Amino acid sequence: MNNLIATSIKYQDGSLLVLDQYQLPHREVWLPCESVEAMVAMIRKLQIRGAPLIGIGASLLLARLAEQGMASEALERAAATLREARPTAVNLMNCLDRMLAALHAEGPGALPATVERIFHEDIELCQRMAMHGAGLIEPGSRILTHCNTGSLATAGVGTAIGVIGEAHRQAKEIHVYVDETRPLLQGGRLTSWEMRRLGVPYTLICDNMAAMLMAQGKVDCILVGADRIAANGDFANKVGTYSLAVNAHYHGVPFYLVAPYTTVDPQCPNGSAIPIEQRPADEVRGVGGSFGEVIWSPEDAPVFNPAFDVTPAKLVTGWILDTGVLTPDAVGAGALARL
Ligand code: MRU
Image 1: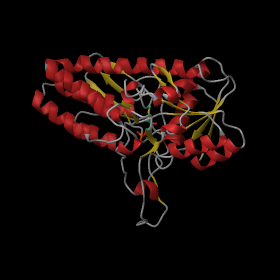
Image 2: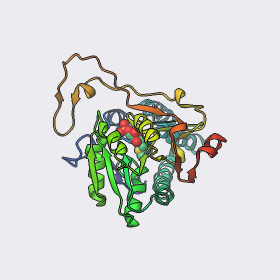
Image 3: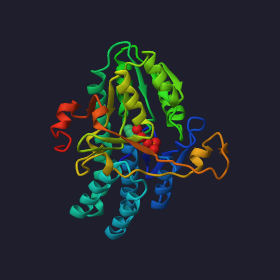
């Protein structure tokens, strides 16, 4: 397999390495990943995360195992285990389905070339979304974003952050409000890190400050990513996205999601059919990461911890895809179901 290098994953000279996002931004540590068990554990701990990247990571591991001589049946079992790592982002299932189709058609030898295509395609998809999305951004816009959707979450420039980076590159003089994104702080830890690297002016806020900024007229649009888009345009994204969409609707702030076709699930009729991952209680009782584990609630506090929520299509202004921007009318007429 040829070397494949992204911001947070790389296949280099026979080794698969993952930038440990759990330790960012305080430590930049690359970890080797050689087994299905290790990849599943890394995906569950969000050391490797983001809808496109978990599909790419799982597929890279499968290709590596094929290269090491693993037989077809064992590769199928490995794919089945990897598929169970997280339930919501459909990119994981889509990528593995593509790998399995190649395995069935041409055998294990086809997997390295297939993952190379997936990897390079994701870079290209990010670039297209960035261009389509940047066309919607007015000069001087103040953009609010949630979670992390950048080069840490994809093989390329990202989805919502890809648009932000492109608008900045086009000198649109944007400013970004970054939701810290409780409970795992992907905004505070990862998006802030990416804004800094891109040189985009930004302000970090707690999630519960977004409504106040909208009421003060300080947010011109909201850009978020997605983990699964249903055929009717409802979509799952990091928990907290739904309340942003409700607040945006109330305040008349345009609300866009940015995602590649690999995040669309045409078989899924609407948001209520999207499986939502439930995560460990201690993530809400306190906080972890490179700054150490802290529990601030009573240690047995009962907890509700869904990793994602569903935003209904009726709250979305536009779906920024790699193919262009879909309007509510187009989505209502079934454009996503036909992708
Ligand atoms: O739990 P995470 O950090 O994997 O959640 C990620 C998100 O919700 C992102 O917005 C989504 O995957 C899009 S990433 C381009």
